[in-house]
Image 1 (cartoon, rainbow, N blue to C red):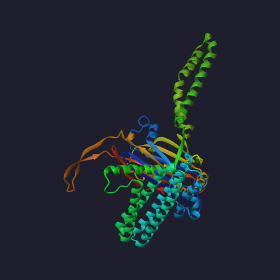
Image 2: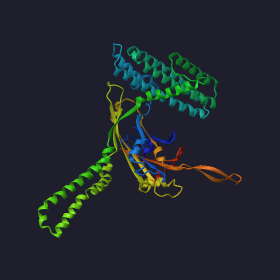
Image 3: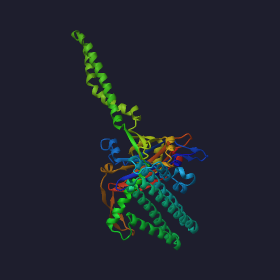
Image 4: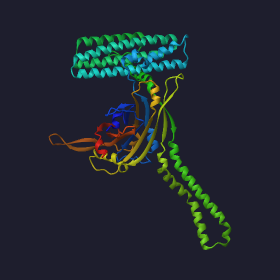
Length: 524
């Protein structure tokens, strides 16, 4: 049976000091094992952070509000997968080529000097084309590496020479379109220069990676010379156009400036694929609704008590013992309204309000200008719950038990759920050749690890020849991240699971290990 592992590519890693990142690539369409085309209508990713029991992650020390403060997330499209003919706009690939769309757009203009929206549109299409060229070189580099690793010199040489020829033709195609852009919109010199510079970075990276693999696996003199000539041409062009270029003779300051500029340029170009989110913040509403309902119930109770006391006031003159007891009970009910309010607040939080998401967001793709409407490509909702490991669903418990070295008591768990609804028809209208949605979340653990012990105590250990020596052992903690990925499709598909183990201390994450996901056991 098909499972969601075929639809979602997952990766988890450590970043910087105490940050973990999980990324997800949601395919928009696949062919199942039985040959049927599967198009998911929604995805649901549940992330179970099973924390060390020593950490103080109670609501008082680390609230759900704190979790959202430490969490960052964003969406984008994956790089468009264009064939060579689609990149240069020939044959059947003409409609998918951003450069052809630019040319058709400019054909309708007889004037020089485009307005802001028109220039934005040209830059957006140019960035999409640059992203497609990057992914084209990445695919060709992967094919080249496979042949080089197998020592297959002839197929490797064919791929390299063909790719160099095609990249040369694609670059010339960009130069032709760039010339037309600058004729109609001379104000776009900076934007055009950014495309030029990114293209140089992409070509240079492909050449250097190919050179590295060739020198290690198949040091063919002809191919090495061919790559060197292309690198020489890129260096000359960079010098002529005033673009950044570094080599081993560059100063440290120049290398730092190049590194900063390169990262900034990537963000600018890749922004063509970013998906905006229009947040509808329901988190405060969800947290306050319980208190609001409870206050309403307590207020109603108080009003009823007040009315009953007043209606009984006329009978107080002839008060009896039973009447006195009744009046006292009503007064106590009025006094207890605050307690009713507090109990009701907790009750409502655990009831139907729990199904209300903390945030519900529209996923908007901005096509770059007012000339094209912003398109709603989907929605996603976020939920966070705090529980302990004894309250986990049975399938997650079994997944956790497969890798438990020592029997432990209940461990604190933060469950972060993200549900994504996809609007397939809107995606098809974009003509992006989009392969998948890309999403990641990044969680900063610094606030959680603030309560961890410093450790680093002296410990006796034997030497190799069994003599006594001393060493310092840091205080180490283990945290599990278990992902359960499911969704909604017309075909029957089972959930898939991913399990990652993080080894960390107060000073950082030391190791990230992907553990085997026991799907067949989990689903018994």
